[in-house]
Length: 89
Image (cartoon, rainbow, N blue to C red):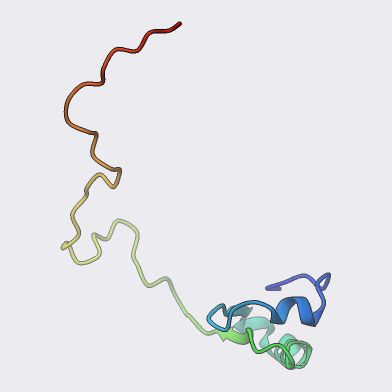
């Protein structure tokens, strides 16, 4: 499930309107769980219950993903130059 029941509705509703939580149900369990979970979260506008209908993975193992992606270092470049000496005193 997407969330525990320990928080009250008022605590959950204090979140920003942009924050959405998706409760994803496998298609095999949809008949058993969809109505129950939809009813449980009906008063919480930040939760949407959805059914996962994917049949297979979108990406194949070993695929380059179109080949247009370049590998680069995302870390910030080191400052140019040297640092002044500091007395350890």
